[in-house]
Every structure is written in C-alpha cells, then in structure tokens.
Image (cartoon, rainbow, N blue to C red):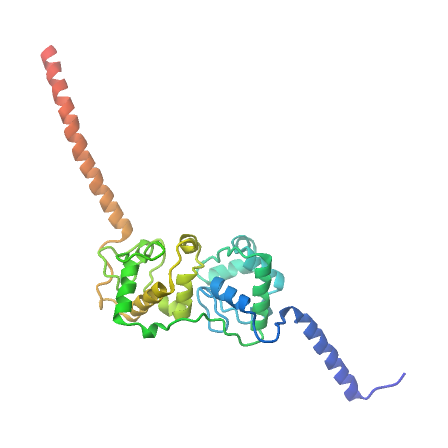
Length: 290
C-alpha cells in the first residue's frame, strides 16, 4: 500500500473535517443574493420588537449566535409554542428569570415560517445581517410631533384604528394629566433608553407583549402615530423628575376608588330620603291605630 507524504495526509484530513462542517451547516445555507426578503420581513414583523441580531438585548436576548448556543429542536419549540415551552424547559425558564419574567407570546407561526426563522438565525449567527426595520429617526421630531405623541398617549387625540391610549395601562414622565395613568403595565418613562428607537418602534407597531398583542392585533398603530409616540417617549426619557408637570396626583386605580366612594355616598343619600318618605307615613299610621 502506497504511503502518502505527511503534508498530503494532513491536507486530506483537514479537507474531510471541512466537508463535515459544511454538511453540518447545510441547514443554514442561504441562496446567493442575500437573505430572503420574506424571512427578513417576518423577523422584523414578529421578532424585532423584543430581539435584535447583533445590536444588544432588548426585551429579550440578542439573537446573534443563538444557532450556535441552542439546538435546532430547542429553537423550534421556543419559537412555535413558547407559552407551553416556558413552563416545561429548565433553560427557557432560566431565561424567563433573566429577563424580568417577560413571557414570549405565541406568535401564530406555521411550520414553514418557523423553519424560515431558524434558517435566518443560523445564517445570521455566522454572518452580518441587517434586520432592523426602516424608520424615521426620532431625532428628526419637532415640538409638534412630541405634543402629538403626548396627546395620543393621553387619549385626547384618538388613535386612527381605535386602539386604547397609553394612559389606560401605563404612566410616564411628561404626560401632564391629573390622573397619572394605569398600573397594569410598567412606567414608560425610560422605555426609550431600554428598547432604543428601532425596538420601541417595533413594539408600538407590532407588539409582542401578550396583552398588547391581543389588544392591538385588530387596532394597529400607524407609522405616523408610532413616530409621534416615540418622539414623546424620547422626550420623557430625556427629562428629569420635576422638569415637567408629569405625574398626576391620582392614579387610575385611586381615581376609580374615589369615584366609587362618591357614587355610593350619592346613592346612599338618595335611598335614605326615599326610605324616610315611606317610613314616616307608616309610623304615623301605627301611632294612630295604637
């Protein structure tokens, strides 16, 4: 049997190893010409409100390199049915604790869409990807844009598609309302710093938070409204406490409790007069008969 030079044997072994690696990565192959537009649009629409790829954590973790950290089967379950997976998988539950208990909602994706996202994440784990949505930067906002965003947040100007105003569930520095806002969800004052311009825009236009997703799926925020709200929240994030007439004296729950007490007192006064009007004749008749 012929013996090959050492250099040839080493080269052959390296070539075999390279072949194995290429086969292992075949599932992440992307056609020539770049990322499929449908996959990038799907990520921007469904994922970018909570995740970036290479731009840092948002509501959830940065997904750069996730295909190297997690197996394909794990990614499939996490993307397709997170509501169930977060209750059963130890690693998923650990992530839930790491990111303040914010649960990833079920996105209603079919098998083909899940596969497309997994392929995209595999490709973007090895190559640079531009997956940020196109948007007008908030630094271009004017004072009128900020005022319009405040009015939308307060509800003094209605959202075009009938969604509820921010004050229904949130409060924020700079709202300037007598009632500071709801406590169902977190204070929005520092949301711009936490999510960034792109993340906040995606969260407003395609919210991935479970309650917001249900509320706004049929009442989406328009691009112009999202820009105005971003402008207001950008200004709120820049402000320091006391610079603006921001937090009201009452919160929504307190205002509701005060209103309920007032209504009960009024009802009690009305019914007490009615009972006196009935009781007095009855007492008089009783005295006469006795």
